[in-house]
Image (cartoon, rainbow, N blue to C red):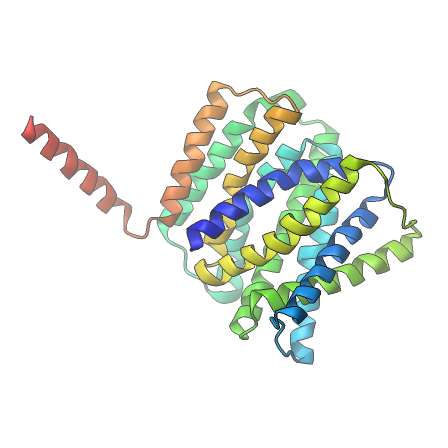
Length: 308
């Protein structure tokens, strides 16, 4: 079941980066994000009420829902949307791929969560693969001030995303189901966005562009309602580190989308990067010590030679 959820998440969030790019235009960024999560939160509460999925909660739990909402559904997306205004959406996805490392560090700091050598090796291999996937883009940018600003926003968004993951773990340990936590967190994220929009005096305008409306619908329903609920279920089932590793694989889908809409060209480097990402994913999920894997491979090779 976890494997199916993983696959759904990779596809859902893989397409979301280009949709975020399409949200740029005459509508203020904060307003677009507010629309996205207002729609998502409304659907979550309607579905929760109809299917009786919302749990009873306490005031103290709402404090953590609010913190989760500010991290996951407000600050991080302001940072990510800002990032795609400076750099390509795929590059933002690359930086987001560092989330497993952020989660591992934060998990160790807040919950004393152990991490295996396999995880760190797999994360290193996977991140190296992601770097290879976008090596051409990085070399072409020449690390201008604009690129550095975009990367800074992306790193800030990834940090906020990781902190939201840590709060999600705390909510799960308090017997709060992911659906309930996500619903209330989205609501509080919307409240924070509304306060920010009001303070900045931004207009609540709506674009009639089919591209804007279509990408808004995608970001609100598949990417938010389905995506975040499934993701937090994975965090609860397999841990924040393993769940966040899908963000290392997600850029592959973003690349395929870029091949269609942004004329991304596959090279030897990007192909090698793809293989590295897949191998890194395998290593992070491999539970036994690595030497047992190599020992087993050696045993198979020796048997094949003996049979010949």
